[in-house]
Image (tube, rainbow, N blue to C red; front, side, top):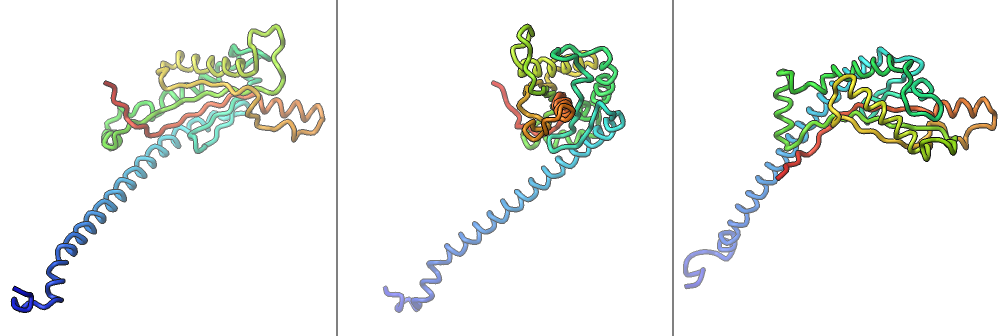
Length: 240
């Protein structure tokens, strides 16, 4: 029986046959809208978490700023809170043992980091919801206290127990990490230590005039230890 015999026009038949496509397109549009809304919600959640992390970092930054001195500079960076300490205050030339005269300064730094809320979120019920929101993303809040050693370009003497400035700067960073961790009972897993030798100077020596005073000043700025306190989300690793 033809469509004419059934009393259905060609246009009506085409419309009837394509009705499923319209329904399918509506469904796809709804699903797409749903996923876009979901992404927007998740993105806003992550932004809120980042705001809280930055708020906590800012609190610690404010406390550390109070002990800033001619030997200690405290700045707020994208990598967290940065503390720059002059190596001349911390160590004797070409040595990695922390001088006794520098311990009060490290004690001030360690005491403030020790009571930072970032290290005690599990103990504060006020942040229960914050921790749950992080876990809902399948992530953990990772706290990092990173110590970086830097030297000037003067090479270590042949009789030194360190083979290079790289070794010297690494030993210095590690000794500071050990002192703060042991003295203030901060878990070792929160720390990392690394040395860059003379390879990341604050002042590039090729830009310094060949004036002995200018060279001495540049070397003094390049000999330093940088301590970073940072917090960021890390994907939760499930061990078998």
